[in-house]
Amino acid sequence: MYSLIYLSITPYFLHMDFYKKITYYEKKMGKKLSIFGNIKASHENHENWEPLWKNATPKKTYDFIIIGGGGHGLATAYYLSRIHKSSNIAVIEKGWLGGGGTGRNTSIIRSNYLWDESAHLYDFSLKLYETLSQDLNFNTMVSQRGVLNLAHNLSDVRGAKRRLYANQLNGIDSEWLDTEGVKKYCPIINTSPDARYPVLGSTLQRRGGVARHDAVAWGYARAASDAGVDIIQHCEVTDIHVSNNKVVGVETTQGRINAKRVGIAVAGYASNVAKMAGFELPIATHPLQAYVSEPVKPILDCVVMSGAVHVYLSQTDKGELVMGAGVDKYIGYGQRGSFNVIEEQLSACMQLFPLFSRMRVMRTWAGMVDTCPDASPIVGKTPVDGLYINCGWGTGGFKSTPGSGWVFAHTMFNDAPHDLNKAFSLERFYSGALIDEHGAAAVAH
Image 1: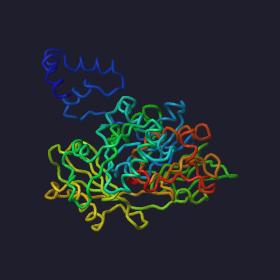
Image 2: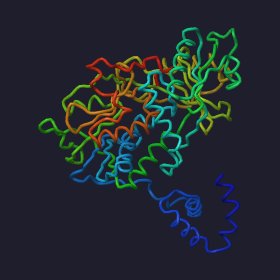
Image 3: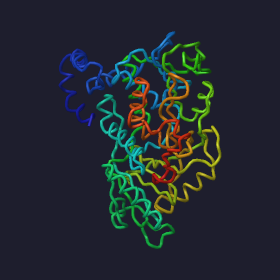
Image 4: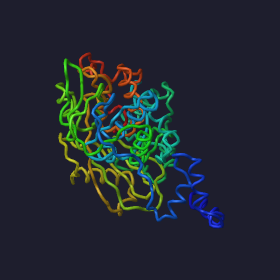
């Protein structure tokens, strides 16, 4: 679209004082990204783009510190500044923004979870995704292309319909497709009755889809930075200072930083950071692998997930097929692939899509996921006053990013959880009020 607009208005601008006119419109737009700024940058060889966010030097004291510069941490800082009008905030990241799980996931967004608590929180997040580009004035490339969760046996059908009815009772869009309906919605799926895993039907959430993970992180970082949040990269937290059971600050590789309240949002490393404050988390960290194929012309216009065959895939705007499955069985912090998992994913993909058999894998990677015993997150207060934790999202972290940041900001500002995250407290592991999404949410990611 931009190219068509450019071609239509370029002769007009070349006929007059080009830069004067563009600068005039840029000033009228303020800090908003706009077609006028894009045109100006294209005539300057793309050499004068302003940085999306400012890299800050740590101050001695903040009202709020967020440990972790991924999607959840940046979203928390943004909503603290925008919704709660806080200004003295810092996001501390030991590497670069979005370099952890935010940049290593498969970008799926959906809210068709079984239990009420999960469904409400994830659907709130999905609603925020639907307007996120406008809210941040940054194209997060949200594509609500629909998510299919296939059923291959009677147990799958019963479980899928149970989840479907639960979603409908919660006002969340969900519908059932029979085999013919699946074939019509996604013609390239192998629905032959002679298939090793015959497709007996599928749930469909039409509002589900994908978003660009890097754009989500960058959009939140840009908006938070514009609101006055200090973004501090390459600054590792090495200790959390606690006095009389109250957090007073953090020790970092750039020195001590004092704070009234501190939030932990470090997927994968949550257990390690919690130990700095003197308490344990019921979390296990596993590698999660994914890979992409060589790019091809558009052929798959929805997200397909299968718990029985155990693969899920979608196609990017560049034409690559993005595929993944479950977490590795072992516990670890490695971010590299292994051939046995890749082999299983490729085999599962061939069962559903035989026409992909001649495609080549282009690259593989892995991220780290921290998983609680009930496969639900921990979002709330900790045993240390003024210290809050947001972790344990397992493989559902990316789809929850806006909602997670929103409720975590509310919790940190008010020193009390929002109704949406009240059930996800650390205390549930003492009370037994677990939210068991293991295997209940189609595929646990």
